[in-house]
Structure formats: structure tokens, C-alpha cells
Image 1 (cartoon, rainbow, N blue to C red):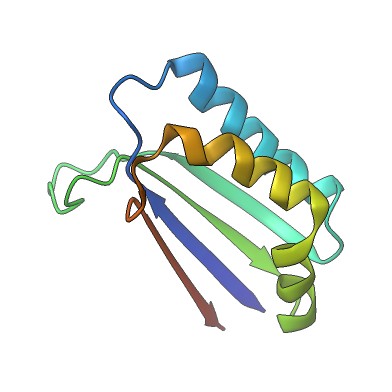
Image 2 (tube, one colour):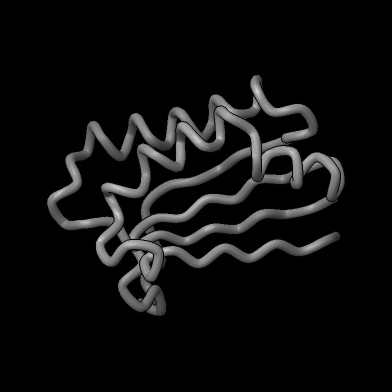
Amino acid sequence: MIHHLVVLQLKKSAKPAQIAGTFAALAGLREKVPGLLSFAGGAYSSPEGLNQGFTHGFTMTFRDRVARDGYLTHPEHEEVKARILPLLAKGLKSVVAFDFEA
């Protein structure tokens, strides 16, 4: 399996409805992207304070590399990316994506 971890720094002006809609769209990819097994995400909630300005994050689990690679170019993924980009505080500098195999 491939785990896809993403952390985001969203603009302070991002409206809760925009954020909720974006995360709902991300969750909806489970029904649209073959091999996407699970999704979980939300706002930073740890009392540790180690988020370095990142405000939200999500993780996806894919069946294998082929499924993950298919997701990266999937048209539905591109639509969700288009929703997220305007919400980012510093453009792509507001995103960390890290994949690992387990």
C-alpha cells in the first residue's frame, strides 16, 4: 500500500464552507479513483504546536503505486486541486506532500 500524506497552510481568509467543501470533495474521490482505499483529513488539532503554520492535512491510502500514480493524473484529482490552490496561503510553498509505502 501507498500512503499519501499532505499538509496545507490555508489562508486565514478561507471560509469554513470553502474548506469543508474542499475536504468533502477530497473524500468523494474514494468513489471516483480506482484503488483509493481510504481518506481522512481535517484541521490541525495537536497541543504540541509543531505545525509550523500548516493548518490542515489529509492522508490517503492507495492499493499500490499504480493506483497512486493513476490518482495523480486523474481528472477528478485535477478538479479538487483547482479548488485547493486559491485557498493556499503561499501558493505551492503552502503544501507538503509525502508518500510512503507500507
